[in-house]
Structures are given as C-alpha cells and as structure tokens.
Image 1 (cartoon, rainbow over the protein chains, first blue to last red):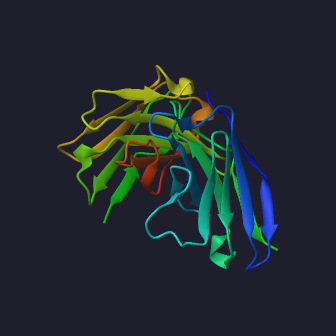
Image 2 (cartoon, chains in turn cyan, blue; image 1 turned 90 degrees about the vertical axis):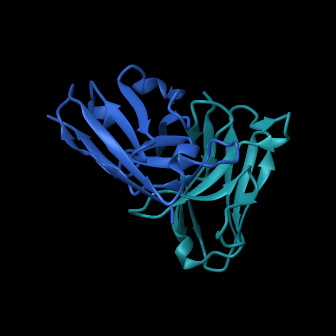
Length: 113
Length: 120
C-alpha cells in the first residue's frame, strides 16, 4: 500500500498570510504514460463531508477559490493557500489514487493564529 | 444538483450485520463508479470499497475483505454496503462518494455520512 504522510499535523496562520501543507508518498504517483500525478486534496470542515479542492495534483475543482493551489510531482506535493481566510479553517487531506487501496494522508488541521 | 444521501447506520452488536444505502440523484448514476469511505469521529479518512458503473467489478481495503460487500442497483439509483461480522473497529461515519468521470479514482461528490456504532 502507498503511505501518504502530511506535514505538519497542525498549522496556525494569520489571516491574509500564506499557508503551506506538504504531502509525501511512499512511491511515485506519476504515471508515465499520461504524465499525470494521481494526487488529490480535500478540505473537511467540522460536521461536514470532505470537499474536493485539487485533483491531478494541480487542477483546481470548479468553484474552488483561486487562492488554493496544488503543486509537486512524483512523491512530493504541496497545497498552498495564498491568503488565508477565516472560512479556510478546516482539516486538509491529501489522497493518492494511483493504486488500490486508495490511501489518504493523516490530515493537517489549519487554524487562525 | 448532485445529491448522495446515506442511510442505514445505527448501533449494532459485535458480530452483527448492517446494510448501508446511498440514494443518488442529480446525475446519471449508472455511468459512474462509486466508493465508500469511512472516518472514525475525530480521526482521518479511510477508503473502504469501490464499484464500477455496472457492478461487475469491486475492490476492498484488506481490513474489510470477506466481511463487507459493495453493490448497486442502477434501476433504483442506489449504492449499498453490506457489512457482516462487524467489529468495534468498524465504528465510524460511512460516506458514499462519486468517483470523477475523468479516469481518476478521486471523489468529486460526497454524501453527509451515516454513523455506524459497533458496541455491546
């Protein structure tokens, strides 16, 4: 199974500042035949289901604010929130869908400083 | 509007069985692969199972193989998860989720979840 490791486990950032969450996979998520990284990011607010933010490592889901961006390739990935808003307080998860079983990172809790 | 509504959760004794349902609407259910994902309250997400669009192909996480069965009824636009031989560690909120149609296994829509509690 592919192990996904996020860092940090929790993060406190001031409003308007940049927040960066990293995700590392135990093996490459880059599929050579299509040059795509099989990595997604989700946001989960308290009492709500996860919400898809980013797929293919850097493609933003429709309706997601452009302050959210994803980057990286192979085994190292980053979710960046360029200017933190109060409504971004949540737990963020990375997910690999390169192989079954699909696996998630342990989550990163993002709070306001 | 895409909607996924889970039901069937509740309290069950260890060794017991439960069947979860997920009613889908707002999209052509029979065209999409579907998944179940669970989450122990306060903990992380764990993928459980997925099924292809016509129900002929399924996958499971090792911890539920042989105990859980995913299925679907495309005529009723409903996804199911039959859970047998339940254990305390199966206690979680169970989400059904729609897989994207972009050839990736990520989920673009999720239900609100149904809580399963396994306890004597």
